Image 1: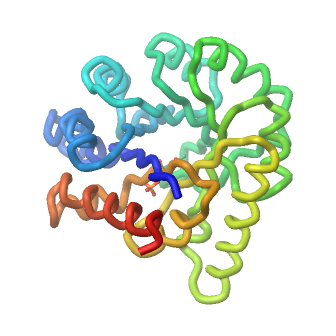
Image 2 (image 1 turned 135 degrees about the horizontal axis):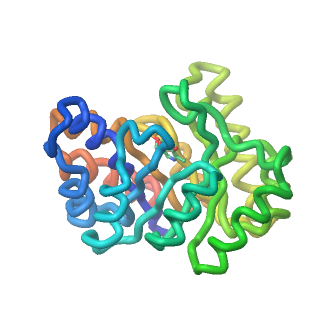
Image 3 (image 1 turned 60 degrees about the horizontal axis):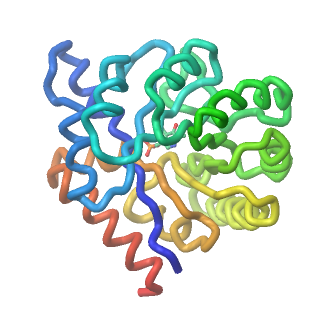
Length: 244
Ligand code: PXP
């Protein structure tokens, strides 16, 4: 199987920085280490409330980091204007609620198909690779295909939080969704809540070409160091893909 693309979400380096309101730790310093650690792209979510990544961070990632940049953002006019100015390599459209602690569910693509088709048009025309963050639900995948995006990112959060038979059921949903992506011609990405253990069955899905992982790795970085924490994930993914 092909090597899986690994996006490292650096939001929570910014969370730690913002806890003291200064400049340390600098998320751009983490972004610059992603390649050395075996990652392939830098992912960051510019939230409406700017609780972690800021506008200045986004500008700096785009200008100062020599890796593809995957900007996660809500489908608002403000965010689209920023994306069209900054021109990241990719945009992942996520739902956003102010009160949530993290992105809790996938985008309701089926419920806002017309809006999203119009929304993503200028991004696609600008050459930005657009993905929609969706639950592993065939209705949402079919709507995403009709919207005309090249990629979707499957929300793995429910799978990661589940245990026992519920986790097996959630994994089956991911397996089916990844297959449906291939049938629909959608490039399949996955992310949210992944760690060294639960990532294995997801990385084993042959249709999944990209994973975006943040919170767990930044937490591990506290103990192991950023490069070592990411490198360990890279080794696990490579081992899964080589059938080891
Ligand atoms: N993918 C998307 C679309 C996300 O919104 C997030 C969280 O910002 C992630 C991946 C990474 O999730 P986690 O931080 O739980 O690894």
